[in-house]
Amino acid sequence: MDYPVKTQTNNSVNSLARIRSRYPTLATSETKVADWVLQHATEVMHMSMAQVAHACGVSDTTVLRFCRNAGFQGYLDLKLSIARDIASPTQIIHDDISADDEPFTIARKVFTSNIQALYDTLEVLDENAVLSAVKILNNARKILIIGVGTSAPIVQSMYNMFVRLGFNCSAQTDSYLQLMEVALVGADDVVVAVSQSGSSIDPVLTLQKAKQNGARTICITGNAQSPITQHADITLLSVARETRAESLASRIAQSTIIDALYVIISLQNMETAIRNEKLIWDAWIPKTL
Image (cartoon, rainbow, N blue to C red):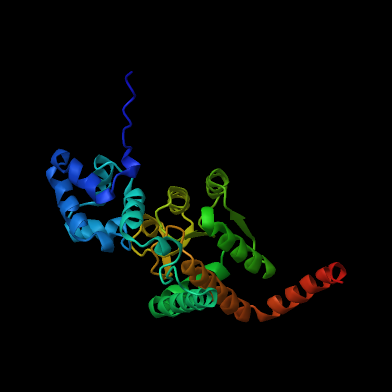
């Protein structure tokens, strides 16, 4: 009896071995990327596609073409594959923990990591960018806040803050509704996009459309060289060095940036802020025990 041969899928092959196996089929410019990735695999996990392209002396398109010709769906797939192969299993959960850590030790490390992300974000926070963001948000006819995936809670949080000030704002976390609403913005409007990677296609397309319509644009991202920044008038950068795809500490940093904007604008509109807070509390009182 003949038994079917069990073939190994690409996903089960070590990522660096996969690159080596495809190396002879790559174009000359792509082999430059392959050589660099093979020698700097641990660095790739913490770099954007634009940063890798710069290091290799090639275009972003060449890096993307290399990824696909090497058997990956794209650059993010390459990063995640390398992380799975060379990072310790615990790093996929959190960078600073070990498998033998006690529960409270883990809790302490998570707190420390989040605190460090706040310190690092404060270090790179651009004062002029913050002041410019405050100015255009204050003067906006309408504010549209967008984001997808794990950015959705941050988008909703910003909406909840700014609607308290009586601002005309909306929040969209659905990719189709984002494009539908951004198609109607104009020169007096502001679109705020939250994207940790800065590479998710839906926020990038939405901010691009906002720019085309003449709206002012702000992005809050963890990647200063990501595609979304190309369509942003103002970039507010959050910093968190994490191996995992869905970062944890970065969410704390991004939420704190929004908190800071809200407090600054509240103080500049103190009478309105205090009046609205009283009205909101009066509305809430019947719902409390």
